Amino acid sequence: MDLGITGAGGNSDAQSDSQISHLALDIGGTLAKLVYFSGNKKLLKNDEVQNSVKASGRSHSILQGKLHFTKFETSKIDDCLAFIKRKQLGSHHPKDLGNDRIVVKATGGGAFKFADLFREKLDFCLDKEDEMDCLVAGANFLLKAVDQEAFTYIGGQKEFVQINQDDLYPFLLVNIGSGVSMIKVDGNGKFERVSGTSLGGGTFWGLGKLLTKCNSFDELLELSHQGNNRVVDMLVGDIYGGIDYSKMGLSSTAIASSFGKTISANKVLENYRTEDLARSLLRMISNNIGQIAYLTALRFGLKRIFFGGFFIRGHAYTMDTISVAVHYWSKGDARAMFLRHEGFLGALGAFLNYNKQGPDNFILMQQVPKHKPESDGTAPEGEDSEYASIDCSVYVD
Image (cartoon, rainbow, N blue to C red):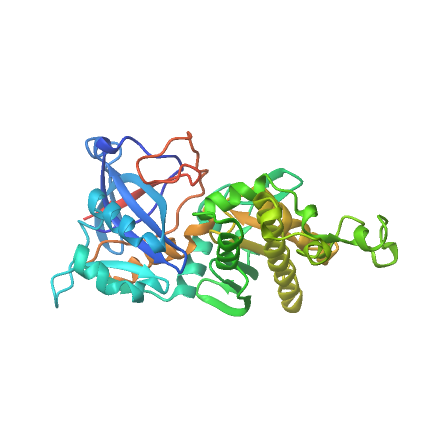
């Protein structure tokens, strides 16, 4: 079976109506991300859908289905394994001729760290793909293939961006995972990691867990939504008696020092609301990433900056903070753009890499006509409803 993606967007059908097969993984230090394809059994019986097409000099039939996206905490990798086993993901993958194990594309450090575990528990042979290659391939695919994938977010307003493929490159891809990588992308397979920072999603979660005792990243984000960072952060107005520092263009509400008020306050950790601590921490990390991203873009003369990675998670305050930082430091010349499937760039890139195995293997990726993914607010077990599935067609030998 070869897979060649074509199609339109949507969310998932009932589990009984689909056959789930191919998957790819991106296992990072914080989260394990999965992209998997399910074919629609009902559509297999429809002669209007199962057409014969010509690709790579061979005849194929078209099978319609969906690409799904889901995630697990890496610290709970056993939950990921159980999900794969329960869904029978990878059951139609080819087997390694040397050891008769199922071959699955994977990227990220966890593809190395957990290779033995996947072999022992699932009889999988993880075929490891380069992490940066996959990130860029996933981003390029989404920007070229999926309508209403990229958007801006400022002042609570989300606005989708129309991507001009003739003027897409070069751009800066800022992937915010446990740490942050900043990649200058010049085209398909043409890129360079030009900067980064160790202060990323892992920093937010790690410090947040120590400060608030939260048990999950999502819980920490929810706390930050309810907090007030001004209780913890030292503002310009705190230094200048409540007025702006106009000469330098600094408003009284600008943050002069993250967590700065805790120095002079006669308080200990227990005297602060966990919500306020989480808010200050999120603001600190987001501001820092936004500033470094713009300065990196300025260094290379880049106007387009796309932010991805599961640190963002579609969180309004995070996106707004990054956007304001980019706008402020660029004086409005640059803008931050975000991706709907932000956290799955690596996993999607690994999925696309099945194409490199040749015509006798499963997946033959090709350009997807522009489409708009839509979500009805529901999702099958294990799938994140906020990340709409992508309707697609595949070529079946």
